[in-house]
Image (cartoon, rainbow, N blue to C red; front, side):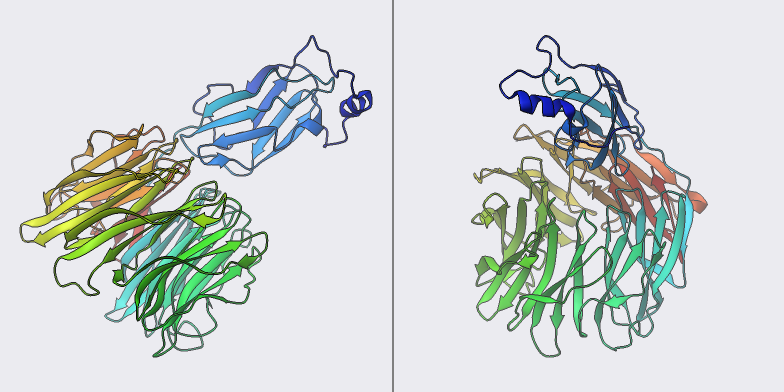
Length: 605
């Protein structure tokens, strides 16, 4: 077993200077690999082993010359050299049913100085998962009123349940699935005493630690008033920290969390003093749980600043975006945190209008640090009927640290619309999708689902109609991706799941993967979830009659194909379920549904 010592072969080459190094008549070769090239059904916890024809020079084997690549970029791993064998071990389990490439650079050398004839790639695909048995894993006082869930790369799952214990009291209970034991643990986070918990945000770190933030107007903290609070789960300690206030005063609301691969996090929220406008604040939480002092990003005037969101790039830089309002209109504001300098740059105005901007500003980052933001503008602050809407998007370019001028993608008169969802491929090309509601009455919802591409070269993409009609139950479109980053828009209308994929710069024909939604209702009986690593999950409830409710799941594969639907539970296992939640990361999935004062579900792993 070698560490990474100074290479004797390299020393000989250095001293020889102009002399050739190695045997010019020989080239290094790979004699065996485990898993072998083209292998499928590979265990996600595998270690890659490559056997060479000669003993290898450890000084030439590092993260630049031996890489494991996924659709999302390079996978963190350790490399060990032992004679002619090189082993690469990922730092966490790989995704399920996902393609990976082990890349061996032409720059690696044997102890004799010989190299490969060129870059060598060994491609494999990991195994499919399996659905576990139904488990009841979240029981507390009061009936569950909503569910939200997040899956971690390590296979852990965190589920948050808001629970009503009275007409004006709502508490928060958290359940966590431990992948090492396949067991759930439950924590009552906020009893909801004399108030309500709301606006829950969950993030799972790569390490398996987790963060949850929420609004609490309860007697949770010693200081009375409304607080944005948070708690951190320590995988090493196996427990959640006591809830703490995110801000340093009351009247703090609607926190968002962004986490980095190093284990740190950024918290952002808005703070409204009684009778005063709201300001945007942020602070950092390091991997040890220590908070920095708050930094004010946005100063509110009149109606204030609100609805802040964040995204983190692969280098740990953070971009925040929010809506600001004053006497002259509304604006989309941004700021960027540079992890190298540990400072926030000055705030930029991305867009300003004398009319009204919707609070739901979307933001999505790619693996290279580029971002796309989308937002909607309308004429009236409180429309009582149809209004004029305009949809915009803009791109942040990491290469020269600037935002492109906003582009208009649609303009129409309608009852309401959704802010465009965003999907980015590995090259930074974006696809947007949104729904326009033209009417909503006893005859049903008259709708249009639209899509647009937004090329990375900032040229004007094409906006098209993906589907339209009138239905009693219509869901907002969600964007899923295959392993190459090609986007698929998926939405439900009256018992059917419809989808259209964008690839080769063209929207493909409509598919209908599901036709048995039946009585599923929007929005909480159907969940459409994107996996950032590629793929997606659709879960739904179907009421066959007055007494029988069934839960189903459908997987969207990394190759862009839909699986057949899986019946997850029915009869006593679903009981009086009325809503559900889904989560998916690296191919691992979880679906949860309510059963009175309990929550049940199944995991795919």
